[in-house]
Length: 93
Image 1 (cartoon, helix red, strand yellow):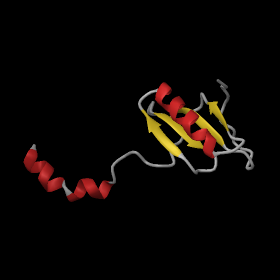
Image 2 (tube, helix red, strand yellow):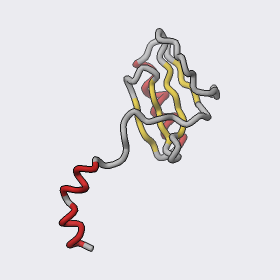
Image 3 (cartoon, rainbow, N blue to C red):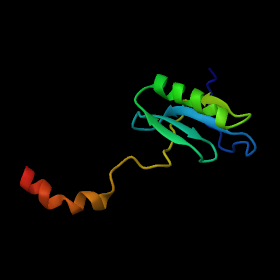
Image 4 (cartoon, rainbow, N blue to C red):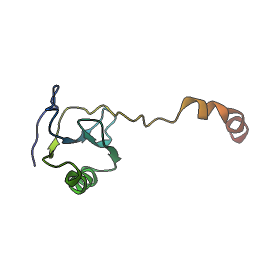
């Protein structure tokens, strides 16, 4: 396993699958060109996913990072979906 900080200027020729956590503690795998992102329940699950996907990126590598990864895909539910059901939620409570 390789451990390094997130690279602010990644090599544009090589894909890097970053494995780490976001600020909320979720485990993420994120490819440096934005081609892949996944959220996982554990470090082991993220590592297994990265190992299974690295073949899709010839010459790519997997890097564990200790810096927080910023998710490209939001994990919060859309605000409009909550407000659309607000009347049902009020009645359910």
